[in-house]
Amino acid sequence: MANAPLHLLLVEDNPADARLLTEYLCGPNPQEFHCTHVAQLSEAMQYMGADRFDLILLDLSLPDSQGLDTVRAAHSQARGTPIVVLTGLDDETLGIASVRNGAQDYLVKGQADAQGLVRAIRYAIERHHNEEELARYRDHLEELVAQRTTALAATNEALERQISERVWAEAGLEAAHRRLATDRERQRRMLATELHDAVGQELVGLKLTLEHLLAVVKGTLQPPALKILSDSVDKCVQLIREVRGVCHGLYPPMLESFGVAAALKQLAEGSPSPSPIVVRCEEELETARFASEVEIALYRIAQEAVHNAMRHSRAKLIHVDFGRNAGALVLSITDDGVGFDPAKSAGKGLGFISMKERARGVGGTFEIVSRQGETRIEVRVPLDHQPGIAATKS
Image (tube, rainbow, N blue to C red; front, side):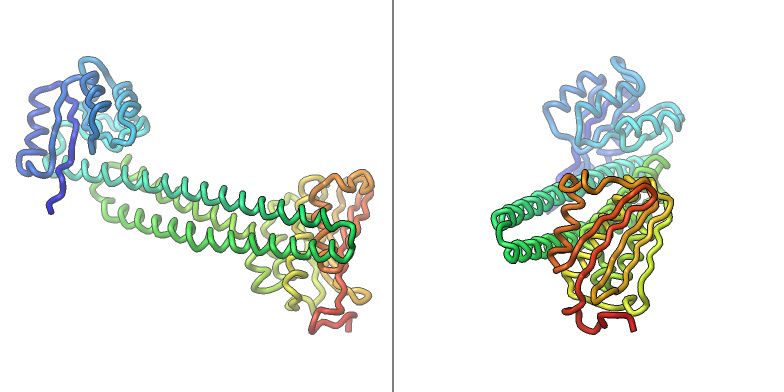
């Protein structure tokens, strides 16, 4: 079945120009375009409110409206419909200003033949469809992140309620802490995977499509139109980068693939800290692997401690040390900042509570020592059940 003709609204007060444009569009291919012609913006506004057009050809010099005000008014009334501006002035500045105020493209009357006019119309419609598709992807991403964040918060809230109800029994409490940490990380991993595999791959596909379109039309479009396509590609790249950043924040792939030592080094390299972060690992622990719940607990504690030091300590140097002592894995984070009173901060900061709970959840201990010029956070996890690692240095 043949495609339905494109419904165009031609807003042009010069009868000769209107007749020429109509002949260009509807003369050779009457089944391809259907043109509605009006001579004033006020008439056009009535049509825009009552009918749906595929594109608007808009003269900037009308009896009842002039210049950019014409573009703004038409764009406001006909949102969702692409506009190509017609001008009798070979003025690139005016054309670019029209694009910035809502037009898809501009043409200088007398310089475009029938083929160029048809091409400009089709490219304007296609660019508009691509922009709408990109906006839908962005909205879908925001909705998906909001839904998953709400689900994660609801899961955490439910598990924390269970923990509070079992606080009277030490063994039950530790089991609940471990379950909370495990479920939280599983949710983080699932969300990171879904964002990467679903939204991330869709954005990559959209980027490749836009790049292909840009390559195809590069030699035929006006610079403002090319810039719109190029900006759309750049926006896709930015969204892809943001999705990947969210995925890495939710669950560090380096930890799962290479272990604690490698993940700590990546944490130091990737942290936007004005102060150096030095990671020192005992040689035998560089490639050692532990139970997954121990690895993620140590990493999250280091992550929280480093971020706290960056935000509050005004430190000139931050050390992260990972080694063994007295039959235990020992993780310590030290900074030379202003210090604080741990007694006054106990129970007030969710970060300290979370670090302590993570340490307890894997059978470890958590300690903070702080004074002016030095704050040290130390976590010890018994090595009794960590296969392949000696409890003391050889």
